[in-house]
Image 1 (spheres, rainbow, N blue to C red):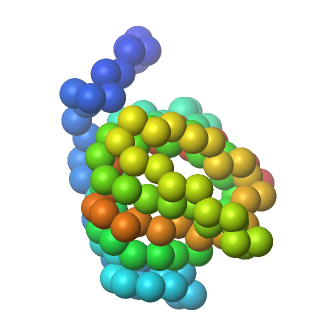
Image 2: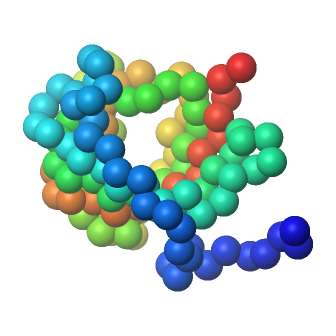
Amino acid sequence: MIPQVIDLMNATAPQVSRRLADIPDCVIEGDPHQDIWMFSKSPDGKLSVGAWVSTPGKWNAFAGKDEYCYIISGRCALIHEDGTRQEFSAGSSFFIPDGFRGFWEVMETCTKHFVIRDTSS
């Protein structure tokens, strides 16, 4: 297979849907539902690129990864365990390093592109 550039705004991939309440001890508030499209994954499975849509809610941030995000629409926040809150909306980009401890909060249905590097062993 010859590597190709992926236009994230026009890429297609199978959609995977999940309800975060189905993950034990994850959701703090609301009933967030998410759709994920995985556009590319490295051969070793450690690097993935995709799109994500989430309905409002608040949940514990997942660990074991570095994540770059670009918000396409909606509003969300990352809240550090010390209470520091950073809000993001359309056009925002940010990086969440492995080791971040805190919460995701989606205040308005949010769409993002992401690049994730799995740092777990």
